[in-house]
Length: 234
Image 1 (cartoon, rainbow, N blue to C red):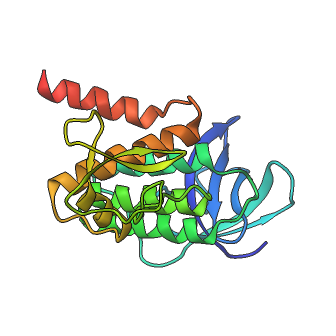
Image 2: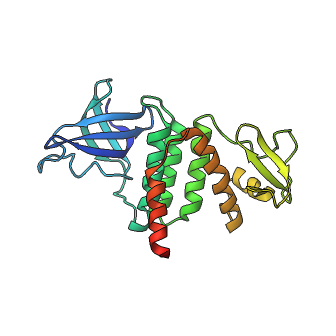
Image 3: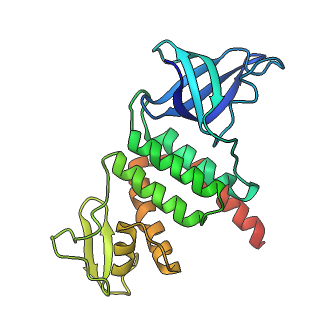
């Protein structure tokens, strides 16, 4: 395969000079690539295999670990600021945990590219993460019904709802634990987050849906972000 659009999600050293790379591609999904000699000083791969940089990757083989042949930038060099790295690691970890190898998801690839671009360009982090989470769930076949309740009634913007992942939204009173505002569900449906309430409710709904997909698996990026927040407030 030659010059496939891709991003590096994770990499780790292998022996003295090589790397094992987890990449996410537009046409072939997630795959593992063996980058021979990538850590050597003269290797052209050494500087190219960067996270959050759109690349064109070429490789041979269709096994669990293909041989990476080349990597080149696809567009201008890009990176995330220090204050946005954890958000980037979070979306990478979601792809690593929730996608299968060799299972293509072009829509999810586009959603990931949009999220990385928004984070790199200084866009609102929380809104970028919520949009990606929503599109990821849709691409995986677990999209949320946000316009109607589980019984089929339209969502009332001024009402309150409790979101049951398997059964859809159900009307409730504002005091119900976990209740979200109807207008927040409307905003999430169109991916417009103009208030703190919309972002807060969207995070609650999407986290519950993603946790259901994770089936009890934890996210290290969440644990690190929580630890950092605790350090900042202590």
